[in-house]
Amino acid sequence: MTEVPLARLLPASLHQAITDELPQRLDFYENWLTGEGLRDGSIGLAPMMAVVSFLRTEGVAYDAVMSRAGLLAADWTLDSLPPWRKRYIGWLPRQFRNRAAVRLAAEIARSVSRLSRVSARLRGKTARVEVKASVFCSVRDTHATPLCGFYAALAGRVLSHFGIPSTTRVEQCHAVSGGPACIIAIDLGAAGSAPVPAIAA
Image: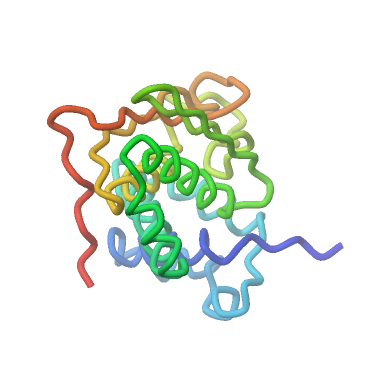
């Protein structure tokens, strides 16, 4: 049976993040993130799981790569959105803009892998994005630290794009707790929060 390929966004963002953060290891990871696969969108779950598994052995570079990939995934998706949709969200009053931006972040996270189920809840100035079957957190044994920083970086970037100060953190990670889902907690309008740094061209 032919493996169902992943959406292009995840392999492409990981490839660029590895190029930026681990350039000396790029040739190794291109055994799975092949140029042909990136061009035609044929990279499936098995090679992606291999990439993520090997990245976990890279120490602190894992978090750097995942954060960078999350920022890239958000930026590329925002760049491709119809201008009218971005203007519409930007014009909304703050309460409704918060809700629309959180929903958009969940929408982008959902597009990363058709195997994941993503939902978002907003209550007051706190939002939670729940990711079930995260491609990053499917591990045999529990892990000491969260593995789903990709989603936290992605959500922070989307909110920053629409001028919404926030702090994002991994509240629960399946790889750490063995729980049913990974949960990204977002504090909207958090005092003293800094915007996500811009990506250099």
